[in-house]
Length: 454
Image 1 (cartoon, helix red, strand yellow):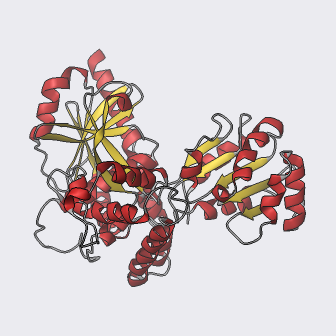
Image 2 (image 1 turned 90 degrees about the vertical axis):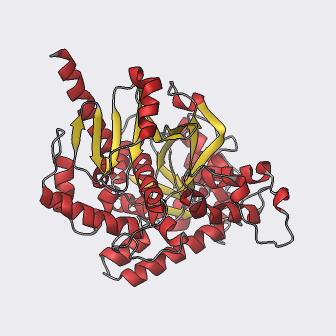
């Protein structure tokens, strides 16, 4: 399967300013595969070291010396690989060996010509504990995007069309219908590589659905590892409550809605501070994304966020569907859905897409009963976003937002099933083009700028 992050890895290899590279992301998103595939395609040979195996000799090599050349010589001998100027060293599950993690600093300072890439499923915990800034390059890896899913599914024609869009104009109905049909499949199974493999290569949706269960089991297994002072049960309580939290009309996360399994636990004993640490833990290992309420659309956006009011989304829409005990027919069945959970699923999908594009500075705006789904900081612009699961394009919340901040709003983005269109300063992006949001916003802003000059 092709992953678009490979292009960035090649750029990293060719950069004269290259530092040791750390790939962050949730477990089972394909970090190990992409590192090995990168080595296979673009290097003469690869030395692969997995610190999460019983062979403790690896640890020893980093414990008695900080000299990068001594370290790589010993590793190459142990792995039976020759050292050439075009050798890639892969340090997998590096968070289990603090000496190896700290050694990246010395690779940067003393041996910048050596190609080193590292990853780990719980790496966010270690890096947030005081890793030296400026000594490594960071890439974030997310589940497979809709575009990557299309590539895996053999829909190169649809991907080529998406990449060919260079102005805001209607999507031909042939492409629109096909993209929408594929999007429903993607939102059902998500972008975790293993389920996608079963679905697109084995053509086995039952095994794909079962593979999502395996991924969730793996996540929960990690909750018991390296969580230090965070209580495992509280992590599980938060994790299990996410579908219910998103199903609410206003899906702000509420500590009171967390249900504990212990029948002897009184509701009054649920303390927000204890669960805050569990939420923070899940965020640092990239299993969830926290969207904070933004008090006002200012720069930088995170300066105006309310740390106590937020929403929590899953890292993958397929995991959210499975955790909600919804059948694979959820998006395809012609049934009248009760509540707004389909909308929450679409929000999760869009947020997942924005993050994979590098649009990380996002939040949401709420004032009284008015709620704008997402605010995006893109360069020096704050862009309000509404997400509709259907074709309805009316929302009072956006009007309320514009009443207060319309003079500083250059563009409004609306995701829906309507076609691609720029209506005034409202850019409607079909849900199936969410992966092209950054590009489409750029095209819309350019068009608006040209119209103002005329």
